[in-house]
Length: 145
Image 1 (cartoon, helix red, strand yellow):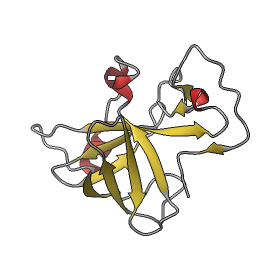
Image 2 (cartoon, rainbow, N blue to C red):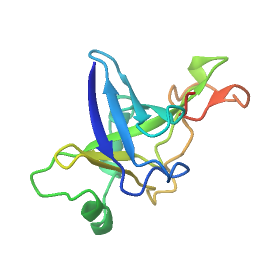
Image 3 (cartoon, helix red, strand yellow):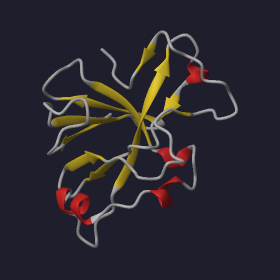
Image 4 (cartoon, helix red, strand yellow):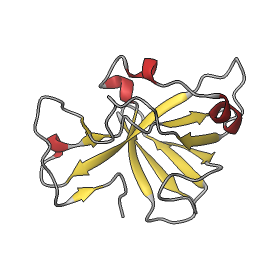
């Protein structure tokens, strides 16, 4: 398992008081954990959205402000991640937040969550899109703890 410290200069929406997270990647796993270095209860399950939605990366367009926040240079290869909301009763009802991806610049060790302006992108997009996702009880809003 690899562990990389990522600094979120503005925090993550809803968790603005936490600025440092460990990106915990397990070899041969689609899922990754993003763990707050400041509060063990603030952790997220994230995934690379293009695995499930192949055209997704074409919808992610960073503006100048976002690029400056991450200190992006022309040679940087940014990573795009999305937070999952897990349904404890039925994992088939898991949703993915396509509206607000997490973007990481490994060169600078900085990350941020940005809200995209495309109305067609959902914050609770069914991960397994052909299934109903009526799961109101027992959800884990990307936060495990």
